[in-house]
Image (cartoon, rainbow, N blue to C red):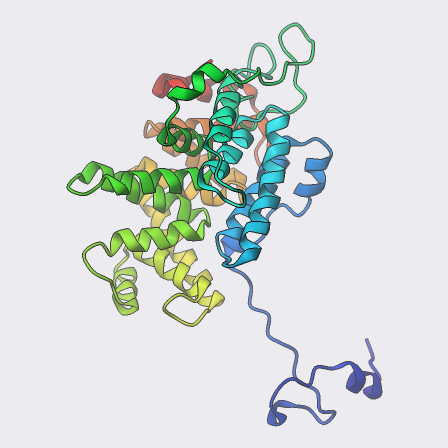
Length: 371
């Protein structure tokens, strides 16, 4: 489109050194560097769809905002956490247990709100009342109403399914902080995984099993784009002394995926190195390649699960494959994640029979996923 020189000169940006200005005194257009894959908004219509009653869209919108908040410091961080909480709350009100547990974690940790352990426990009980099967169609989708099943479903009698039962106050006194984080992490909330990792890390001195669990959970949350978890992963990897960026680069070049992951977070956030999102994206692609190889060749269920969480909204068909590989490696969370995707038919053909078999297997591996 033709732009008259006088119009160009009146509207252009002049905030650059004179040697870079053109004959009209205008600066060249700024170079746009694509955001890292985890920072790209995957579902632009989610807020609108959430308002129309799609509780899964509410979860996706809340997850995107929560991930965004983890990459920001200052007062804006709390504002974005509050926006995420609003979406999670809508999902919880529609009987989505992941929505309830996501809000519970935020109240437990004081993310965007004042800490309120009592409220967190009330939400935990409410999520537990949304047992697998609540709100799902009779015969064929057992367990799919728990976190991400179809909204507005009916019970076996054909009448609308009841919402979550009223919280049992008497049960709240026995709920500890670890139970809240563990439940939230199992359902797919990455702040829950990161919080559970911190709880494990605090008891990991001399306990290799606890340290390994913390490392795996921080990795899972970091891979999904939770920047605080990336920082914690680096801290845990540096327990014996701070590593230089050069060392991370050498380890990454040797094919150590965790080092590539931490290095990518450094470049994305501008930590220890100048911010370089193009370099961060390049490293993230290497992470995906290395994790994929480990998942395929070593049949490492935790790595498959971490990679699946990364793709869950961006490439659901790929995520479904990875969740099933994690399921094959006896990960109940992997079976559950795959079941949700096949129930929703997002990126894959809807298959409630396959979803039921996956949920049955999740139940056999972990009673938390049973009716």
